Length: 444
Image 1 (cartoon, rainbow, N blue to C red):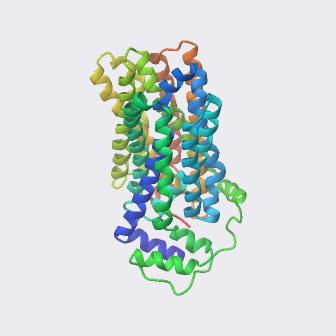
Image 2: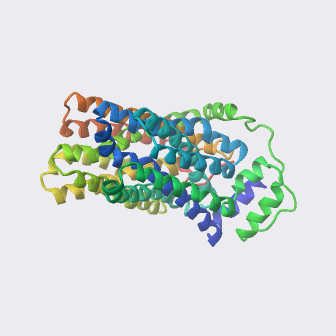
Image 3: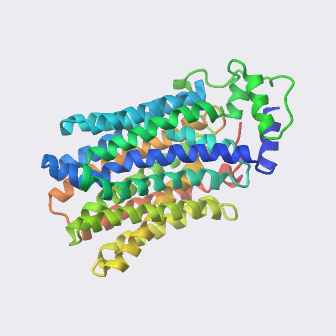
């Protein structure tokens, strides 16, 4: 019965309720993008305020990413046990509180601690929001629905950059953290009122009052109601640890390892580009305002790239699109510094890098849930994101250390370009998996 409901949902035309759920996830990820990447835009002011070295600034940039990694690894999997909705509400509250506390940090160590808390909340909510958007989509539009969440992340980061450029000179760097925290917390009551639980979760996990809640969702989906709950298998994972272990069952081990490799190296390259480009543009002779403009353009490119890969995935195999995105990014990063003598052309290059770097992340988010069933879906994506965050953590630290050793941007960008090439090789290997060839359908 569960499979039949999923098949009907996959095949039927999308209705307004489904797009409303996707829109709510979009708003969540927009706020998350603001909350995470505003640190990159505030970095020059924070660095000047406390006279930080490149390595010290790298630790601050990595603090939020460490929190995101831990949240993805150890908080996100609870969504497969207690539900997508309650975990998302808890984590949004945590992220908002961390942002407001960051605005009142009295030292670099305090700011780092509060950024860690913010990251825990964001890491916990990200996987659930991507999975929930995918679970409420039909087969045709699933890749776009998930990719739109990455678009929201880039859009939120773009808003953060624009806000930082306007607000920091007038009110100081704490103001952007304060405003971000207030907006994040203000979102929580709206989610309480309007965000539904995953239909897949209700039917398979059957929490208290599951039949009534499932039928309410089915009514809004314009689908036939159920007279009783389906029988469920007793073989699914009973706790979070067992759910993690199941990622290494015989049929899942190979896809899990390959997707982890892809996540690690894509995030390693992506967060170097996102975190350090505003500062490195200043190092090659641009003004601080032009550096922030470059950071904004990266995220504007991300909005385009994330949406584009979702639209293209309606017609083309997602694995092949990912490989193309990754290889194009290798070429762009390798040649980037050499076009900066012509500022306008260089900014166009920055936007192209944003298109393909962000698109790589969006493609991985869309691809990963198709590898797993309902009981492992958030856990699988959460751990993929968490492993990716490990790369994201090491990336700013490695770049900061190399900058302190006098590495130039012309040496740094080609070095980090290699990571996208490694990720492309992992996706090539993954496309040989039969599960990828099955398309965008979710399994149970």
